[in-house]
Image (tube, rainbow, N blue to C red; front, side, top):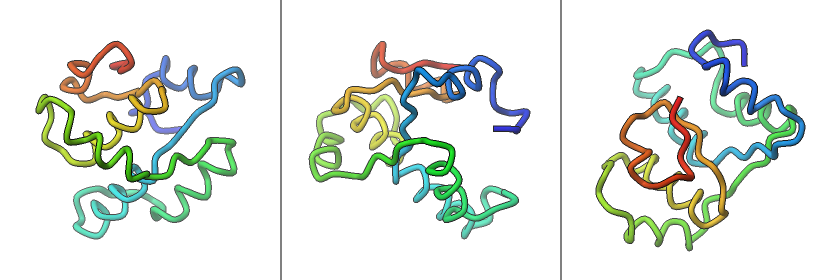
Length: 114
């Protein structure tokens, strides 16, 4: 939450007690893989990030077979498998997906670009 890379308006949404904040197991999985491949540098590991999210009051969204299968029905606006899974999960919940990835809003109004 203290990262300067997190936009102020995104921080406001995440800290608003009236919002239920979900995080996907796919987020943690992607962090773990990128750390192992030295593609991102973080001061803590994926397991600790997941624990901190839960302690903060965020709700973990598991990866279901329905979400995994729904990826096949998505247009190919984006090829990243993690992002495609997040789109499928947000569609099925339904939930709003917050992102800085300019390709994801092509999937619909439920995507908020920061």
